Length: 253
Length: 253
DNA sequence: CATCACCAATTTGTCAGACTATTAGAAAGT
DNA sequence: ACTTTCTAATAGTCTGACAAATTGGTGATG
Image (cartoon, rainbow over all chains, first blue to last red):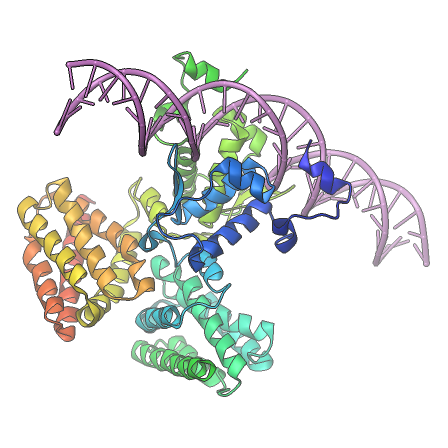
């Protein structure tokens, strides 16, 4: 019997997986779920997952879908498959935690404060220099993108989805403007930290500093090509964000 | 007929893919090949690949193997599949070029000088600070790993595979010692830049500076917990490596 | 004429079941 | 004690079928 038949005829009994992550592709949903479980420590380093036959029958999905999910995880360095041995979780140091999707999974459940601070340190290291590079190498399209993002930020504030997206867009445009492809690809990782910190701040609702002036200062330094000022204003922007986030974390704990 | 039968009975006719990348898993080999082709620009941004039926029959592999290869590429942000539309190459800015595997594919064919310089800029931004952090946070295991790597480097020199590996091990141990998980996961990217620069230097054979003293200086600063000195020695190490690499590139062009 | 609802075709997504390749671990031989 | 050979378990591959999703057109309808 083909399992599609069941659904095609309007079945009521949906498996947990299909129900919980009904939207999207099945292999993607499964990769998501397994990824989160690994990050949470449900499956530990070196541990081997149930074999394909067992897993697919337990989850009530086909072996192919299961295998495609495993390929995704393997591509992100989280698992490793070998005949006879099975599929095992690799050492944590080999996981591509800066992969945008992995970061998303990480934030699915509340990440450790340590990790959030790690991400802020990364911002503190990379973003000021990226801003300095941007001041030297920015192009009209970048300027325009940043300018537009700032306008949206001012109109929408961080309370709306569009406003938060504009914040991300600003940082993304800045990283692109740095003219360094390797640096720019860290943009999504930076973005994760930004998203998380704003979420924290919103929850405590204590410190609602208007973010626009800080951002505008960075923007203007870059626009006029002032390398030193771009670095400095960006550094202080990140430091302020870090301090606010730390305070919010203290309040919540 | 089952294609495995052909091979099982000792066939002589191997398909190009199987022949060229005979070792390893088929899906991995195909992902490798497609990945390299995308990075080289054989398939451009926005371009759609031939559909699954056509591709798998052209390459003489099963649809499943082909699909698993595509899942790998998709996991690295390089392609995107949708029903009816097909599988298309995503915008370059969305590729995870810092993914170790992708970096490997990048170096499969000679990468652009621009990209190598980008990687060095990334090193210059991250490694000195990582060294400074390591000076504060290093643990006995890290010290030992770095010490051991240095000993091997001194014995083997960069002419041997073991020596080059020790160089990578040193930088990896250092990044781990930084105590920042996000930073540490950049280790493999850094490693790629290191590998590439030594390859350049070896080809020109012009400047064979002994790398051990530089590395030892960094090591000792970290071992005694001297944050400022760790940062400084590491910065000058990277600057020297960059200068040598640039000179080598000039000679070759 | 414009707009909206519906239909058809294309492509990926999923399924099922069979067979092969690989390899870790056990067993046998030296 | 060491090496070789076997065995069994597991991922890897293949095939062919059908389902779902999406695009783009086509026709009904205002």
